[in-house]
Image (cartoon, rainbow, N blue to C red; front, side, top):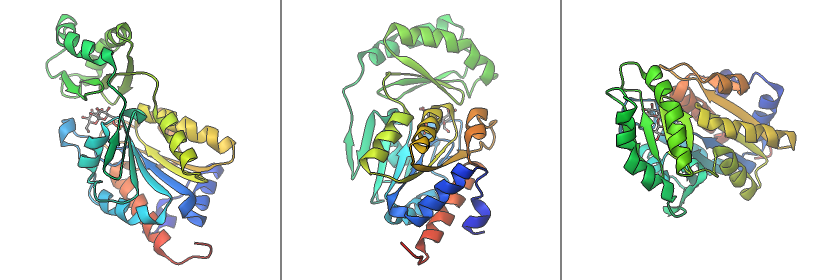
Length: 283
Ligand SMILES: O=P(O)(O)OC[C@H]1O[C@H](O[C@H]2O[C@H](CO)[C@@H](O)[C@H](O)[C@H]2O)[C@H](O)[C@@H](O)[C@@H]1O
């Protein structure tokens, strides 16, 4: 299947975004979330890896566009490792929702927020006192901690049980809760994927953007593209419709294009790469 079969945006804005990307790819940024978008969702976060064909598709696209970026809640170095991104020239990784940046093998990151150490110390007793069910699991991400409920017997109920208390614990230490797919992440405030993406687009003087995401943490990036579109940037918003979990309604409703999970994202990226490898007027 070619790009015309795979990428049929439902909106005028999305069609304009795709057209602008194809007309002037070197002025375009392709920005992608990691978990649920480039990598299928799995029960153990340490086993998440880029979907089959994702790394090859990014390798083919990177030299043809202004920039390829991975914008993720993951630590940047982990996204590089799990995504097989280390050898791809021109890829930027904005990790921890934009607090970290990895480029050309160099990681830049601010000092850790002191509230994270405090939460890390208090969390085991807090979860016990709350009666967190068996299977509740804490992922220590260094700059944040994430409480996962996917491996409990009733993941949604466990998520709801823990949500308000985790918000109180985060607040007590100057942190915020980032809710995601059966995960409550306690992290420093002041960054989000919208600000991270906007900064990158400005830095690269981008004239078009494709952003693909699947989860609540991607909503600020969708909002940023919507706002930038109002100011003249062309943009295509892609929802990676979850395979397994229900899609995040807010993203699916705001997307110009919904694709079937990471396999669909890879298919889209592959078709874009193929299209951009054809000789065309103006490129
Ligand atoms: O911004 P992202 O790249 O989407 O990262 C957000 C969170 O993703 C991870 O959790 C999710 O993926 C796991 C592995 O597939 C899955 O087990 C979990 O249920 C999902 O919520 C990651 O573990 C978190 O640290 C990220 O914040």
